[in-house]
Image 1: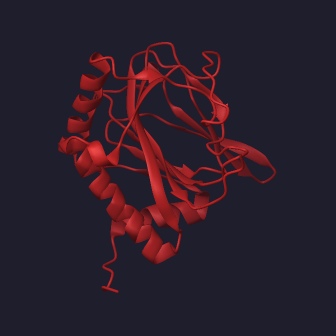
Image 2 (image 1 turned 90 degrees about the vertical axis):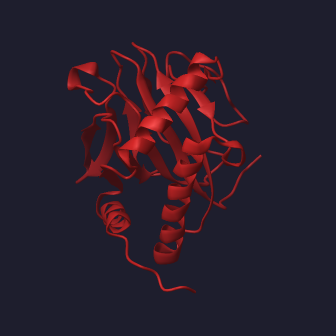
Length: 212
């Protein structure tokens, strides 16, 4: 095995996950790549390639406006444009680092673009399913305009167990910000947005078990 060079950014994420089960990272992706992904999302959305989001996985999928209101486009790593290819290249490097340093056993991933129109939200939930425990880490990278303000809403609220109660960590979707958290542990929600909210969102998955 080649000697592994320590990566300070990746080490910060690992340290955060060990300490508090989530990490907020600025500039994980260079700004020019964030802007390219933003343009890629908007182009696909304008071309009517997005679909209404649903609740659950493929065994119990249903559309529920009362729970979530975003539109999504699933990414296929084998059929990506240049911006998406660079995204997966950086992500795969991160996954390789996690597997080599933390023995996390991540074997696959799934990602999609997400667009929340004005007035939409995603109520409190957990990212794992009763019949599928493979999702290990949830990742979201925000592709909004650079001047996102708190009054625009759309913050990610993470519910953190603490001393028998829970604490709420509100994270605003600032351009280029990336949030990583444990899929099976931390419940979270997207608060109502007051202007379009853009992101690329997905999960790093282990082999796990799927119950049919």
